[in-house]
Amino acid sequence: MKNTLFFTGLLFAFFLMVSCSEDDETIIKEVDKVIKEEVIVNGSKVTLTFNNVIGTEDFELNHNYTVGGINYNFKSLRYWVSNVGFKKTDGSVAQIPNSYYLIENTEDVAVQEGAYTYEGQKREDVTISDLKVGTYTSVIFSVGVDQEHNDNLSLNAGELSSMVGMTNVSWMWHTSYIFTSLKGTAENGDSKDIEIETGLNANYRTIELKLPQAIEVINDSSYQININANVLTTLNSFDPWENPVVGASQPQLMKAVSDNFATSFFSISVPEED
Image 1 (cartoon, rainbow, N blue to C red):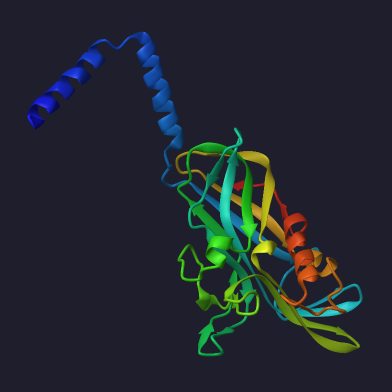
Image 2 (cartoon, helix red, strand yellow):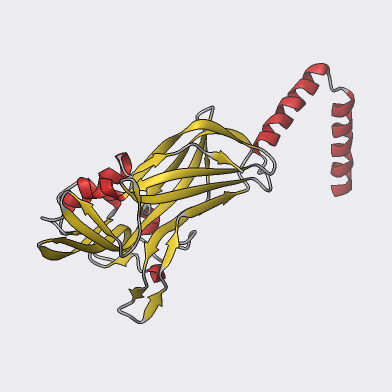
């Protein structure tokens, strides 16, 4: 019975091929075109470089910056970039799976009350490999961690891990991720410790940055997209001297900082092709 069905299927396929008209050939070509457009291209690469700055100066640890008459010196800057996508000319978005990246410039971080040390790092580049064929006009990403993963730290995706020292038990009744963190000191006669952090699902923000010119992803193509990340906008989004600590107990200030990430913190430079 199985052999009979198999033979019948072959005959049916054969007659379809023999009776294929010019219209059928057109349809086949169109289907083949769609399939090719959806094929992931090996060797293609787009690198997002987050240039952390303060105004026109590079962001550096243990360096003095004067903003509004106040002297700042920072020991860490960290933020999650997640759910990266690239918008095509037709408006569709090529979403990058498991795209959770920690952008950071930090000294050693004590994790789990000092039981573990996360070594200091400076990381500004995110490389996306093997994109689908297409012409892309903007890059989309979020700052923070989406609710599904934020509410369940046991879920593994990308670089998400409680061992990077970006979790907090005070955000909610259970531990969740710190979305952004800026730490250092401020001096204006007196000295204050600065700790500006955001978290909670309500402060998850999505950003779309339009590219000055479209990029075309084909076989072995390579692009770099430079994104300025301006810490000065964070300092200007509220009064950090009067409110040196921002966290769950200051929800309005946390919202102001999160809104700044969505509207002002990032700006894009012209993409460069290698």
